[in-house]
Image: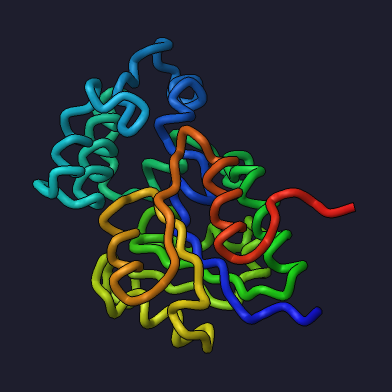
Length: 223
């Protein structure tokens, strides 16, 4: 039976890659900091992270949040980090593939094998990771479309951001399943007619299972 057209559209940070909150111990090792120095845990324990709570309340932007974390973390090691790629390279080294979620790779392969299109819709992909990092992640070549607010300057949840990616995919919004870890961005996708779920960084497997279900696929590999 011929599959109906459709697309899996993913945010990058938190959805495809593990969050910095999940890799604090790795970051502390890379920076030579005592274990437990980085104690802000964002969605894993909002009570530890007043800046995260301010971001969730709309008082600051997500970009503002990470610039502040970059600045304060750099100060811990006596360095002045003015860009987010500086931050990422110091805390994670030069191997971005090491923090890619295996659940993401499995879901991407499942969707691709079923003939679905693949898209990324990010507010700050290259702003955060640097323009050269894509060459170190071969799986990104599987994506039909990558829309990055670093260049478009149209940020989720602006409805134009979602329409840009669906238009580039050549699909109606209703044929696309969007996955993002920020509720406001999920609501933006729903408002233009996309199917969408909020990715739970604490339960990545369950989130991808739900995304595949909405796309009409089973998360399990059929025999």
